[in-house]
Image (cartoon, rainbow, N blue to C red; front, side, top):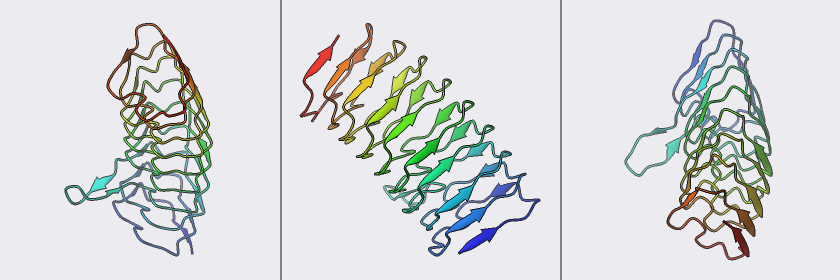
Length: 219
C-alpha cells in the first residue's frame, strides 16, 4: 500500500501506476520533474508528497474517441490534500478529475496554466484561490464541484471557459476581475444568486443557463 521511489528518476511515465487500487501512499524523490498523464489514474492514494523539483504535470491521455480522459491523479476517491510545488508552471487536463474527497488544494504562485477539467467532479472542494499569473480558467475546470462556495479570481484573469463552474450548486457569489473579457456558459446551472459584471465583458450564449437561484446581475 506504500511505495517509495529512489533518487535518479526524473519522469513518472504514462499509466505507470494505473489501477493500483491498493496504493495508498507514495513518496516521489527530488529529481522528478515530470508526471505524465494517467500515471496514478484510478489508484486509492490518501497521501502523496510532490518534490520541489517537479515542473509539470502533463495533460490527460484519451485512448479512444469519446473515451475517458486519463489524468495524472484522476479517480483517486480518497485523496484529500494536494500541495503543488513552487516550480510547477502547468497542471494538465483532468489531472485531479474524479478525486471526490479532495478538499485542500494549495496552488503555487508560479503557476501559469491549468488544463481542461483539472478539478472536474471534486465534490468536496469548498474553496479555491488562483495564483496571480493565471489568465484563463479552462473549460469544465470545476464542473460539478458541488461544495465549492468560495472562488478568489485574480486581477489579470481574461477568460473563464465553457462550463468552468457549471453545476457548482454551493457557489452563490463571484467577484469578477475587471480584466475578464467574456463569459460563455461559465456558470450554467450553478447556485449563483448575484453577480457584478464589469464594464466591457461580453456575456455570450448560455452563460447563466439553468441558474434558477439567480436574482441580481449588475452590468
